[in-house]
Image (tube, helix red, strand yellow):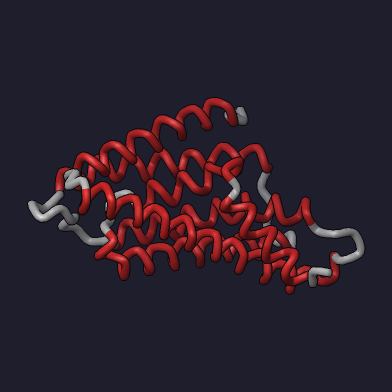
Length: 201
């Protein structure tokens, strides 16, 4: 029989890695689109910023310190994807000859942290719905396990994105600019469709 910790850890992992939750996956794709595998240290910091952001609102919302309408959050998540994708497209103007971006990464950290706050609200809505009857008083270990599961799923997704990027850029010799425009454009298109479907006003 599974322990409560392993149950919620699996819930967190399944939630972010589930193809039906592709809005979170798509955000990670857009966030990592401008980086190469060799820039893994920058990506690690970027993912950490996103983690800090969504961990804060996940905890606050789970304990009902803050609350936002779920339909608004579902709309704002694709907005984060669209903004990140557009930023990637405009950033290609600063692309160096060797294929990496000659700019401060600080802006991306801010994006990841702030947008993580929004995604954390989305995670919390799912977590609150999955809390088992009679276990409301054990929210702290449930929250911890769920968040660890989300992080493990997130690392798997980022690893797959970087592996695909390595194949496209290093093996097939695609240009970084072309790859960034392709990925960001596709992400932006899907984000617009999601925004249309989740329009809350």
